[in-house]
Image (cartoon, rainbow, N blue to C red; front, top):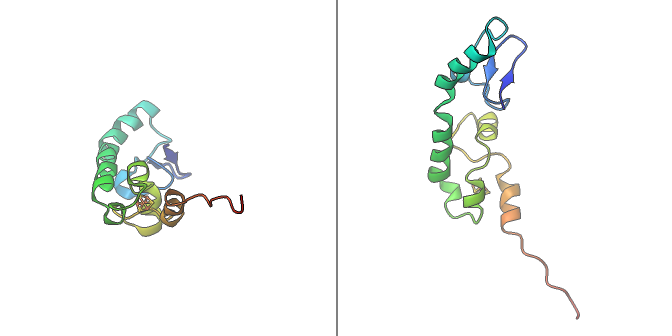
Length: 107
Ligand code: SF4
């Protein structure tokens, strides 16, 4: 979900305002040209997300691993400054993945 700042920088997401991912001067160039530039900067992001899914140690034994896979890479970066960390809602996600219904009582 691309995001444009008021000073004319285009990022792949509001959670990823990383200098290496920025396309500058968006108010001066056609959108098509901006996205051509963006492709070269952003093309590694899917591979990085795949790397997270495979390499994040806290996720290896998590029951939600195949669904969550470390959560949102942008949230992880925004809250830790590191792409290779689990996202900040990990504890909430784990609570959902490990939830078990309470059996009915007294019937
Ligand atoms: S809930 Fe936490 S440990 Fe489990 S897969 Fe998601 S980020 Fe990883």
